[in-house]
Image (cartoon, rainbow, N blue to C red; front, side, top):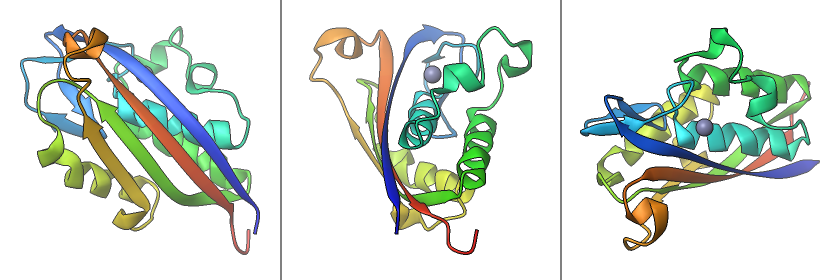
Length: 162
Ligand SMILES: [Zn+2]
């Protein structure tokens, strides 16, 4: 069976007056991520990993910042659209492994919810979606709480009976 692997990485600044959304889940906090869409760095990294696995460019090309229809859009919708593309190409998700890099707040209590939300987008089992969270030990822009980053690796497999 043909398999493909892709990697995604994304960063957004933390700013006051925005809702913090990661992995499609609203996390109560005094600041949120800034961006054209809802700035969900985890879902953006996942979408880039999917596109990367099929050498289809990146989400900036598919959903440009300059396009007003994507302003404040839920990144869950962008990820759904990206996955439609993957399926059209004859592939489906085998598994995802992700890391969220954020100093504060603690992400651990929300990981199960994120896994459930993301597995619904991919119509897959929760155990195909791995999400880990780490700080950077107060080092760098993440350690200074200036922003958050996310990394994702996606493995795709050829769809049966496509
Ligand atoms: Zn992004």
